[in-house]
Image (cartoon, rainbow, N blue to C red; front, side, top):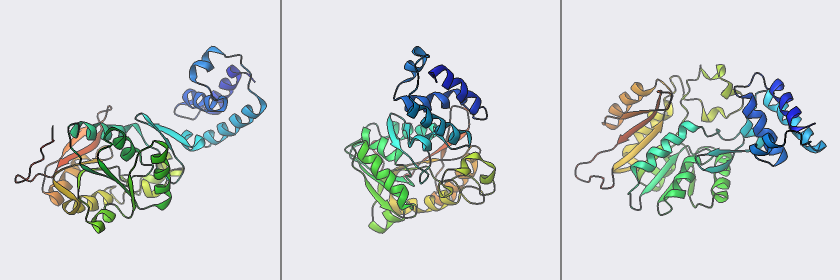
Length: 287
């Protein structure tokens, strides 16, 4: 079986995928331990029997709907590589927008304290810490298995974080920790919508189900900001498309501040940004 023949077969097997060509190429690159250029410049290269068997197995799993990231056990986020398994949500490009905003807001920050609530694979916390090694970064998650994945990713990316197990910001509250920057990509899919989505078949429900309107976790976390956030702290929350106005109402009710909504490249609501102002102690590193 040549590379050309393998890719032709893969496209047929993955016809129902959203991206059959890309999926076929990514899986074959891993099977051959090669890059995309090799696939295109060596179409007559023959796969070894072991490589072909492995590729067939991966194609069958992908054709059944399993995400490529789970099949390979890894994915990219921003400019880091992360290990992933079904205990954690697969990081999405939309979350990179939250990271970029966090980096922009704190580009001239001193040694601030940062928290990533519901860290999952650790994507946000690890990517932030790599650019701000002087900052203290905490990462919380209620799931012990998810924290184990995040800890391994931190070791792999050579950053030192403090991981705390518990519900939302409760581990920080219990330890009296206050933060200057809070990031969170919490579950925001409404419970009754989840069974209709492909993402619900493989990725952890705990990381997806946001309750009746998708905002249960955000409500609780916004109430906790009064305890864990320092005066002038920045809060960045990832939300679902169309949830912007509802979350803005929540920020007024629970935090007494007006939030901004940042949209993704498709023009959809994606990030809620708010600053917990205190005129007697203003944030002196805000851009």
